[in-house]
Image (cartoon, rainbow, N blue to C red; front, side, top):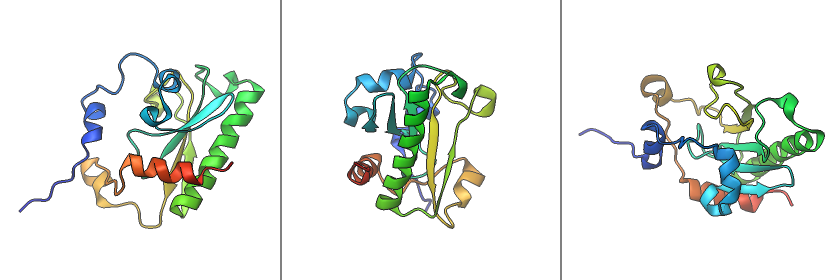
Length: 160
């Protein structure tokens, strides 16, 4: 008997339909928070769950303005981007108790940016022993919690 891992929400991404030609970080703020998986809206930037996460709780912070590089941010955008990253770390710590975090930006397609024209910061919670054989052998990640449950937990834990 073979085991199956089901992750139907990844099909659009794997099939190449995740990029409809627009910019997800420009388009998401026009949607409802639930439809866009938005955790928090600030004045200059917002925090959103990654629809195709590397780990449960993987969130991203992006400015509303479409800019490709950190040097293109104005002072308000820069300050709020980092404040929301810090708030995300606080919410993740409260809601999910990770042992550490990976935080970073992929600037340009060659650096791994899936959305290369709109700067965004990834905040990925990590747990001791969370590296398993799936990403190594099958380029597959095992997600133990549905995105809607993670969204609810992190919204409840988001700093006021």
